[in-house]
Length: 148
Image (cartoon, rainbow, N blue to C red):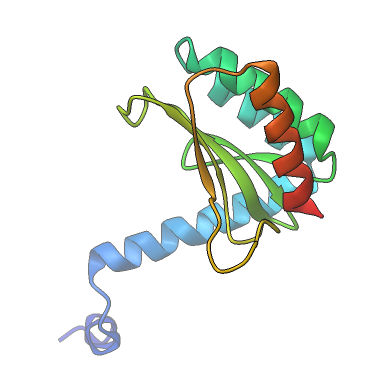
């Protein structure tokens, strides 16, 4: 018997689980590097946006500009291949393309790290069909509140 395999079995992790843990460790190392170099995160987000099809690409570009202007302390990064914005390495808000996820609308979401708590129930994901001045003003207010 191979003692290494016996040890792995006794820990209870399958080969797939071990591969997933290794992949996550690599992601964490990459994120640490990205957090050190905000420009790298910016490049990754711009590349993710450029890979989108219209109208999601135009919406993502505009959201990127709004979020950067409203919350310059947030660092751009990709999260599940989509644009996201983080504080201290933790995602605060993110954009999801309608086309990538085959939904009828794109979404702007906020994680539990966003300061949007209001009572016992509050929205954290918003459907986006288009960005007008009204929606942009609402997004600016939400992003500012999220990082307050």
